[in-house]
Amino acid sequence: MNASPLQGLARPEVAPLPPYNAGLSSDVVRARYGVSEISRLASNENPFGASPAVAQALVGLAQQVNNYPDAACTALRTEIAGRCGAEAGQIVIGCGSEDILQMLCLALLSPGDRVLTQRPGFGLHEIFPRMMGAEVEALALTPALEFDLDAWCEALARGPKIAMIANPSNPVGCMFDAAAFQRLLAATPAGTLLVLDEAYYEYARLAPGFPDALAALRDQQRPWIVLRTFSKAWGLAGLRVGYGIASDAALVQLLDRVRTPFNVNQAAQAAALAAWGDEPFMAHAVRETVRYRDTLVAQLHALALPGMRIAPSAANFLFIDLGRPNGPVNEALLARGIIAKPWKEPGFETFIRVSIGTPADNERFLRALREIVEATP
Ligand SMILES: *Cc1c(COP(=O)(O)O)cnc(C)c1O
Image (cartoon, rainbow, N blue to C red; front, side, top):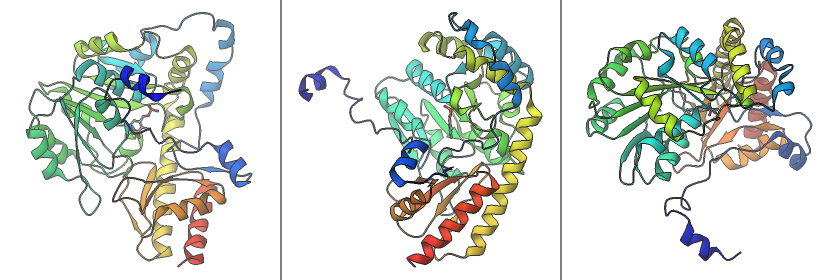
């Protein structure tokens, strides 16, 4: 079809949006590279999977797929509110936390509004604001691959409409501590909505100094929302459930205006409730993953590959500067059945992000990386 009539129909913001880089599927890699065994290390999924209680909760659901789900996610919101010390009215549930990011942008942003975030960062922190015609300011990291707190405080003081802050950061894994969070809060005008994306909260809270953001925000007279997800630590990425804890029920009501009414399906609600009820399963997976991560960091350092750097990580992944273009290394990893995420943004074409997998996955990655670098020094 001729593209020109379409160009007249689409909003001017839409065509220039970059596609979200969702990576290659296991089946595509199997077919394209002729490998049977795959290590999925590109999407920060949890190799421990979900609690067995989730499988139990899904049994029998086929008998009720003719009914719409609860549009208000009542049971899940009540359970989450109880454990987070909030009211159910302050909880919003999304089809993944990305759904909530989109609701926030739909409800709040008009063309020309300013949004503050970090680059490299989570793609949707930029894509959704730009979809609404907002202007995105993206702050750089420090040379040590940490949050540039001075730059953040300065930019926050200029009063963006929304500040999208992921702590820990994705793809970098770096975090800011409780004292730094107080500085950021003090720098932020009351008219800015703070969106604190804690997708890796369950991992990061094991790191010394990680802020109890909910406790710090509770007394603040300002709008805020903390986003968390069932996709990572809770092992439910395939079912798409995320949640937000908002400063005020009024913010949740605004989001209710723009979300699709039945956004979270029956299976997703049932699975999330069941997973939430088995916190020990999640906690075990998280503790093991953090242990594997620290082992992998030590092993990578021991390889002493020339030019390699590893960013500090409080999450279930590592952001690694290979000291050489990431494309050929990534191809060689794929040929061995290892799916990682090579970074494509300018200035980061030597980096890959690799999720912490099972010990077997991690060893495979380590061995492959050593072989690849030794083959082409
Ligand atoms: C994975 C991730 C999310 C969202 O995941 P959902 O599956 O949509 O809940 C949000 N923010 C960051 C920073 C992430 O890494």
